[in-house]
Amino acid sequence: VEVNQMELHTIFRESPIVEFVEREVEVPKVEVQERLMEVPQVLIHERVMEVPEVHQDEIVRQVARVDYRDVEKHIELPVYEVHEKVVEVPFVVEQECLIEVPQLQVIELVREVPKQVVQTVQKMVEKPVVQVRERIIEVPSVTVQ
Image 1 (tube, rainbow, N blue to C red):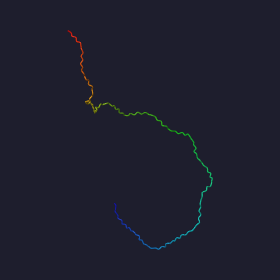
Image 2 (image 1 turned 180 degrees about the horizontal axis):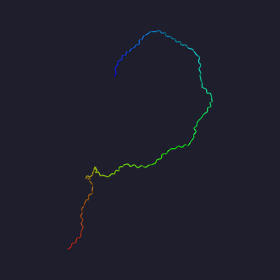
Image 3 (image 1 turned 90 degrees about the horizontal axis):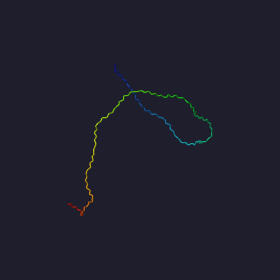
Image 4 (image 1 turned 90 degrees about the vertical axis):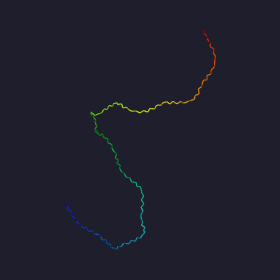
């Protein structure tokens, strides 16, 4: 079982007190005077001069020396052997047969019938003129008694 306990604490705070005290300090005073003095100075001027100097060094040049050797390397070649394995697979054979299905087909029929159109065209035709002339021809007549 928990028992609630009460504790009492007292906190003391101190606040600082600032006092100002005046103090006298001597500050040194500096005066500057300008004085010109000529000082001799040596100026050195350098020039480049070539001085022949011979150095002998050895050059070591390394050249690869090729050495060929025949090294046998064994490589396994795969050998394939064929084994025939018969596996029965179900196969559905479909046989097609013809069934006549009536089909309706719509055809447009256009019948062209000649239309009689009578057109009067005047045509000039020569008309023969008949002239009658009378000619007398004697025909012998035989009378039989």
